[in-house]
Structure formats: structure tokens, C-alpha cells
Length: 67
Image 1 (cartoon, rainbow, N blue to C red):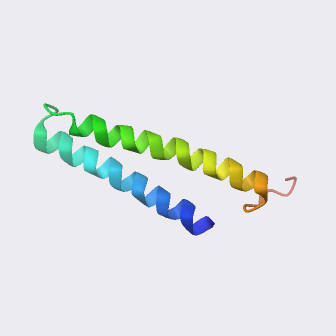
Image 2: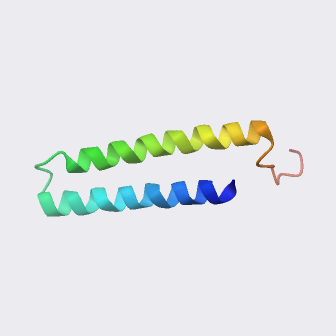
């Protein structure tokens, strides 16, 4: 399950990089930058929900000494 979280993080970084490329290439005149950033935000929220669900299910354990 940890590999899924890492893959989603890499996709989030790819979306952020594509938004930067679109911003530089288009000069902010098209909606491609906004679309890429919307995808990034959606994936970030989905990753957060996945991590919370995974912790609740016991797939992820806390390494904190009190947790």
C-alpha cells in the first residue's frame, strides 16, 4: 500500500511540473495551467483520504513512540 502512496505523490509532482511548463509556454493565456493545478489538488485530497483510510484499516502504522 505504501507504493501506491508513493506513486500518487509522483503523479502529483508531475502534474505540478506540467502546470509550470504550461504557465511558461502559454504565458497564462490558456486554461491548461488551471486544469493541471486542479488535477494536482484533486490528487492531493484523494491521497490524504487514502492515507487516513489506510491508517484506519491498519495498512499504515505510526512510527511515533506514543502512537
